[in-house]
Image 1 (cartoon, one colour):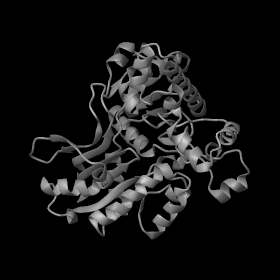
Image 2: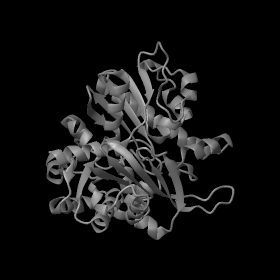
Image 3: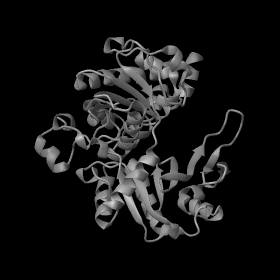
Length: 403
């Protein structure tokens, strides 16, 4: 069986095709920014073909905005042209990542009329995260016809959160009636990292913290393989400083901002999702690499943004360690976690009291690869691990279909 996996956001769309658990094709549709050398930028698709008995090939193609919006149709044409499939019927199921609060979404499910009804209700809570996924579901029905589409929840991993970790201090009746509680996200990535770590070490240690650091960012405390605390909350807005998301903020400040900037709830949501975080603090960029460069050039606001980012992470690592009652393993994952040795070094600085001792030579030599970067004598092991959300989703689709 061939399974198509979809992982989409507002600015990029990722697709992968699996056959018997092996990835044979993937495509990344995105908007490339203009380059400092004068390149105009624009929409592109990068496709990788990994067919059996063939040399892997990678092709990058400029596309129009219309093609980006109808990416699945372009993908189907490409698969047929390269003879990866003989017809659309060769694809037996589609799996799509779903970011949505609610008890209903703490389970991977086949998307049917009831699912779409529940998703539309959840849309008002997280329009910027769920909206693109619902558009992809609609498009999949048009492109692939009557095909099973499975919603893979980004929150399932956090189903184990205890009551003391998931409820806010509002009237409990409101929490229960409105379904307003912490759900946590990045669950697919965390599930993948746990699986990869178990393979690498042979056994997952009892007390683990995973720092997933990308455009979105979270810290999760894992006890005996289960999530017991995480920084993201009812929506993916809470917790750490992120690329453009606000993270933790005083509710009183939210009320004040709404009043002074005259923002209704929808505009406030857009403000907190797209205008804050590293971008808002620096006033220049949401990219850690660019901010490090600007910091070296003497830009004070870029330096401030990075220092707030690091400080918030230290705080959440410390609190997660307290909840766990100690720490055996600290893992860095996600784009920043994997690639930025500078940020890993800053985050772990002064955390020796927790038993974290980085080997700076190993750390500085690790960029985009899996490695152990702690000293031999470090009481806490520190790893850089790659996450493979698409592979994890493909596995989950098979589980749902078999059940």
